[in-house]
Image (cartoon, rainbow, N blue to C red):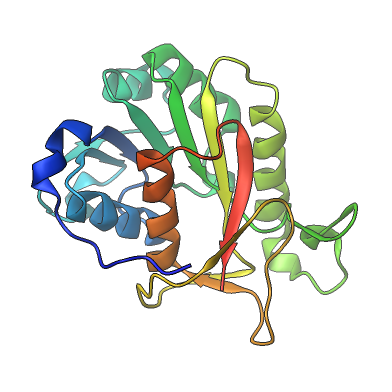
Length: 218
């Protein structure tokens, strides 16, 4: 799949979304923030340290605590879409989901993990012997988050899993999409934060995976 370069699309401003981005200063969050800004969306960037959120067109930085359900709900109330781009071990799925539900927002997208993707029928990546022990707790927490979302009937959620290697890189606009199986090539399994951000914002603009998980890779 080839995606055109990001452009600010002011002429279609009526179609722009009001997005609350939790974890806007992080590795994935900062790339999502830029992609959203470049496409003309209005973004409330939320982080513990809002001064670390990039100053970009259409972006308002706010201080927020992912463990404060009421405070988080107040910050995201009135937005069309909520994205959480925070580490699973540094947050609580029940609190995040409850905050989104309490805010009244109906669209919730989650920066997922690769560990819950299958490498063979019924066999998850996190359960393979070669999966790095240092990442197992985070991966399992991400899988648990996905399981919780599957029980939520009143949110249009989407869980986007990256490939096994999720790292800084280039915005190439060339990638593949999948469902529940890890994507890999002869070069391994990877996706850049920048290309991942394209796919997440595409999903906001043209929803295609409501109440589903999907994945992206090269």
